[in-house]
Length: 84
Image (cartoon, rainbow, N blue to C red):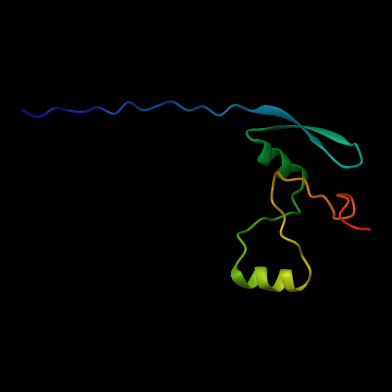
């Protein structure tokens, strides 16, 4: 005797939400988007993101470009009290 398994399809809906996109100068924008990333990209279309190749990492680090970690606030050594 064989059993038939029926998969139920889950209905996912995407809803537009309104996000506030703030700039350093205090200028705020209201943007309707599906995700915060989509709202940010709408405000900064000149920025592009791609996965870094090994060559990109070597070239940029040799030029003095630091590696930043998203979601982590960077503190300079001077502001952290680590310099004289």
